[in-house]
Amino acid sequence: MTNQTNEKQEERESSRACAALLAGVGLGVMVGAAVALLWAPKSGSETQADLKETTAKLKERADELVEKAKESGKRFVKHRESEIEQALAAGQQATAEKKKELEEELGIS
Image 1 (spheres, rainbow, N blue to C red):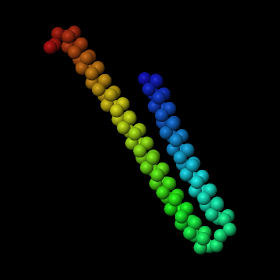
Image 2: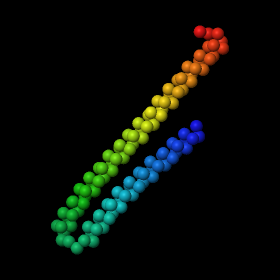
Image 3: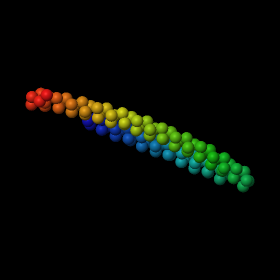
Image 4: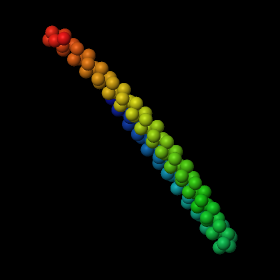
């Protein structure tokens, strides 16, 4: 039981670390792009066009990261769902076996 708890805790920590990394990368990209645009020696219309283009790219990248996070979440839930089903099946089997033992001890058929 302790081994499973440790594994689950490690998986949660790993998921949190992955999410934090993705958030940090996304934030870094956005800040870097904004700074680069603001420091670039361009006219107002050129800067506006660059901002629009960069905003579109950032939105696209954010959408990709959201999709990756969704897929990762779905895989995590599916994995846990399988574990829960296995635990329930094992519990039902153990209950049936114990019931049979008790019935035999008590002479009940």
